[in-house]
Amino acid sequence: MDWPSSTIPGSLCRSPKSIRLHDGAATNVPSDFDGPEEDMPQDVAAYVEKIAYGDVTGDGHDEAALPVLCANHNATAAGQRAMGVMVFDGSTGRLELLGTLTSSQPRLGEPPNFLEVKEMTPGKVIVLDTYYQQGDANCCPSGQATESWTYRNGRLTPEVPAAG
Image (cartoon, helix red, strand yellow):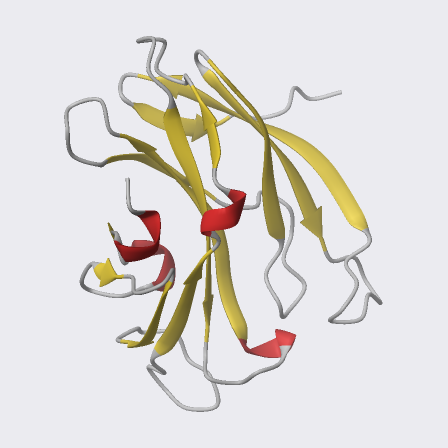
């Protein structure tokens, strides 16, 4: 798969159409995110060097988890609007999105919380969610949580932690 030149769904970046990547990025993507202005176009970065692979569907073939960041043209962390991990199945010969993993932790302003895939096994994706706590500077989120997503009926859904 040529990830740096792939086409990904626009939903994470709130774009009405698919996003065609060039060298792992796209600029001026239509979006309904607000930035310094209403409906500000987004710059999209797919972190192809951080793709994780594992057999989530249990079919003997690896799926791919692609981290994606959406940001307005502001070059600071405060311009970041969304971060997620898109999990794709390519066993049919074309990419099928199984789900987009996003943080389940509270978001305290900008930038968004950050997810890193730690493990992909049949039926499960485990991520490290790094999130901002009250008083954290834009550079330095201090919270961390391990979260699980379950593959069932062709889709990934977040597991809800048991009440303690």
